[in-house]
Length: 272
Image 1 (cartoon, rainbow, N blue to C red):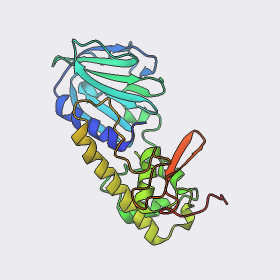
Image 2: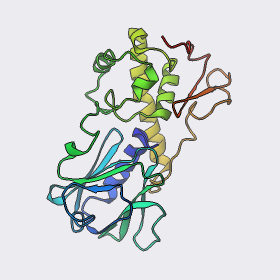
Image 3: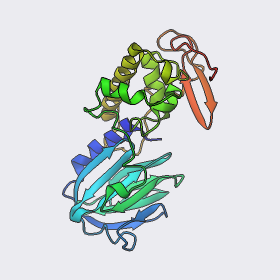
Image 4: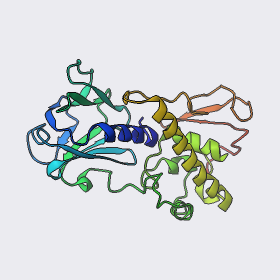
């Protein structure tokens, strides 16, 4: 699942290659594309120029001339791909934009779970406007983070992944943030001390920032790839903890995997 670091690197790359390019052809291949402008699929995109690329949480969008935007929520399996227009289109492409520069941008989705909207009003896109501040928003200071956290009583990992709390964190990076902060993922928010909240905030900032720097150097134009081999605990069940050497624990519940170190992140799994 693409999370904030993955999509921020995609945004950065597309911001260098798309602005000024015009959409020569927009080919809708999957039914997940919804045109809220009321025009035939693809017709409202053709001829428009890309004027900017934006991101908020797990949403990424292209701002187009004439006041339209193409907004994408990749959800579980969505990816973007950048290629020359003459190359064969990738399988399971939901949308292919052929550009005046001779390149093509595709949105791929193996599970058809993502959502793609063509709209003149981003607030009309389900889930976008209801998000909390982006996890890297400079306005999200440590005090503001702590104040928002006080509204929640659930387990800290579940809260971290709620987009209305802060936007952009998913399952993988929640594990990494909690490991950095030395917090048990099943600890209730209401039991966090002031020091623990501060550690959580600083861990969020550092983990996401470092991941972006790593991906920026490794992804380049291959924006369809998901690089996760540098993560310290997520998906590494049974491997030695990079901090203490004890085997990393891995639990699965509600179709979600949680990876953590019981020694470095002590706590109980009893839910009360």
